[in-house]
Amino acid sequence: MIERLNGKAGFNPEAFLNSHRVAKRIASFEKEETVYSQGERCSTVLFIKSGRVKLSTISENGKEGVIAILTDDDFWGKRV
Image 1 (cartoon, rainbow, N blue to C red):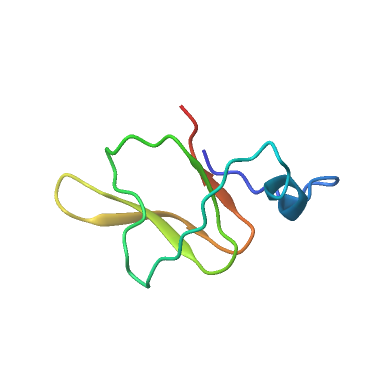
Image 2: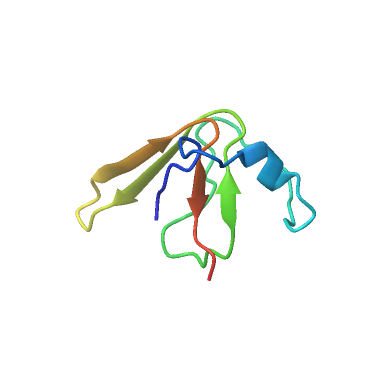
């Protein structure tokens, strides 16, 4: 699910991520590098500190469909 939380009153992404309750790992990715592939198990929620992430899917006939473009301060992923 994609949800933009940074615009909601009372929510501070930096304070949330710096709290002792959040386990975190910082990673950097190059342009065009795959962060996650369709069909892989996803067990994390990711936060974009800076940059852009394109969420897309590939149809059965090989065409790419862009679902969303995420930018600074966006959360994405799924916790299972």
